[in-house]
Image (cartoon, rainbow, N blue to C red; front, top):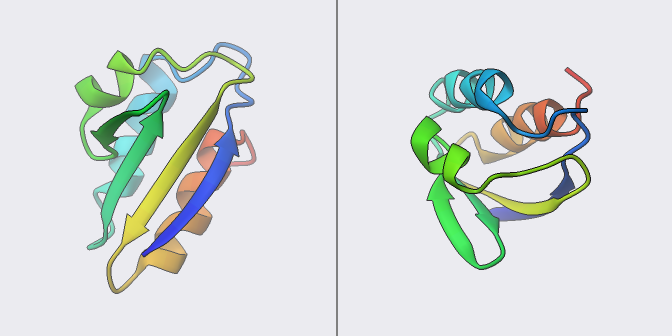
Length: 85
């Protein structure tokens, strides 16, 4: 299991479009993916869960990936949240 603090850099935060993109990428991995914000933990493979976090630009979340491909998952998913992909 690996954890990483990630700052949301998308100008409009983690709204429907980037959240949908995040979920589509997360579903490609076998690893379990979770996002935590302000003590609330949701599945990184649930668009409704991610949207309930109301992540705005500049907020910090913790991403957790746990499984065989956790390193690849963390690399790719972090890039989406940081606006690098």
